[in-house]
Image 1 (cartoon, rainbow, N blue to C red):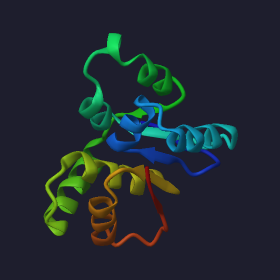
Image 2: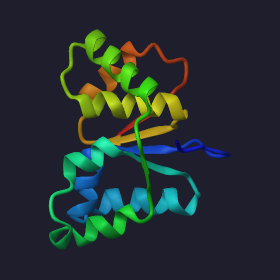
Image 3: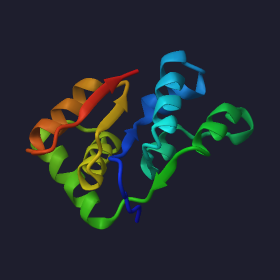
Amino acid sequence: MIQVVGRRPVLYDAGALLAAERGDPEMLSLHRGFCMELMPRIIPASVLTQVWRDGACQARLARFLKSCKIHATPEDTAREAGLLLGRSGTKDVVDATVVATARSLGATMIVTSDEGDIKRLWEVADSRVHVTIRHV
């Protein structure tokens, strides 16, 4: 399990990784800023599963991943993700896992291409912690 000490982490969803893979200037600029600020950059393992296809063809993504931490989903977070799916009426297990992971790690931001579902999941989570949902 990842222990976050100091700065609150940033979580990337599949859309953020795909943006990095295609060299999106906005995503790469955000990421550089997070690196410079020493903010932990967290990717739930299920997000990596959703985007990884062929390392030989994903060299840019492979380099990007070296500056992030891959987070294995513990049972309590997986259960929370399931509850969030039930409450929100959404269907994307990975989105729910991103939100549950963000809550468990006290993330400051979720970088996503799917603001709608992420916002809906965060709303039903009844979190008292503020998170910025950043579209890329």
